[in-house]
Every structure is written in structure tokens, then in C-alpha cells.
Image 1 (cartoon, rainbow, N blue to C red):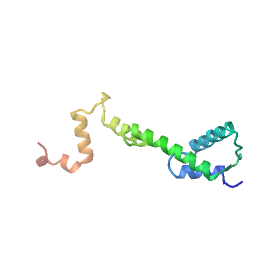
Image 2: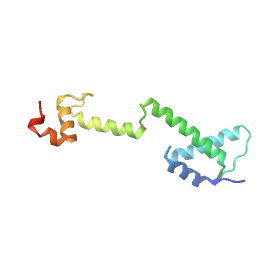
Image 3: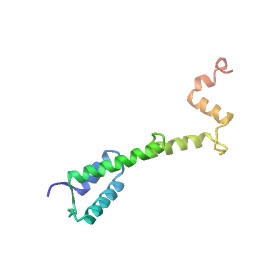
Image 4: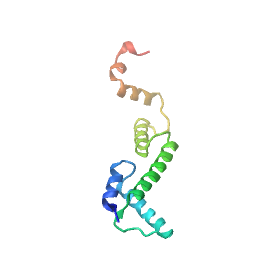
Length: 120
């Protein structure tokens, strides 16, 4: 039987950036259980090309669905944006008031923020 050694297949999926190695290992285990339930014998330590591509495609579909629910942002990007928002929302009110906006402008455009001619 031909295929990639399972650890190599897991690393490769992780390198493709769809998900980490732990999640790749779980996806292969899930695929192996499905195959066993349908009567197919699956080699324990090898991942054939078809299985590899199926796992990759299934995870890619899941990731696209997740990103669609998050306006096209990955989970990491959503977390980063929340962290930035929380950094500027000093009073924790869940919105950015005038003082918060001044801090944002000062951080992003210091040359404009400190120029008296540029202020209203």
C-alpha cells in the first residue's frame, strides 16, 4: 500500500496553513473511523493521497465557513482585532468614545495629532 507516513501527512497539513498539527491528527482519526465504519480497511501509519486530499478539502470548507461567519477574518485575526479594540477601550464600555478616538489618532498619525494647524 502506498501513502505518506501519518506524521509526515500531519506536518504537511499544518504547513499548508489550514489548521495546526493537533487538529490535522484529529481529522485523520475521524476519517479513519468513518472508513472503518463503512467497511474499508485503513493502514494505521500511512495516509493515502485520496484520504489526504479529502481531509484537506473538508477542513478547507470548514475554515471558509468559519471565515464567512467572521466577515472573512480568520479566528486569529478576529482575536487580534478584539485585542486592539480592548486596548483602546480604556473604560471597558464596549465602545470607543472621543478620548479613545484621540488615542487612536495620536498612535496612528502622531505628526498630525501634534500639529496645531491640522486640528479643528
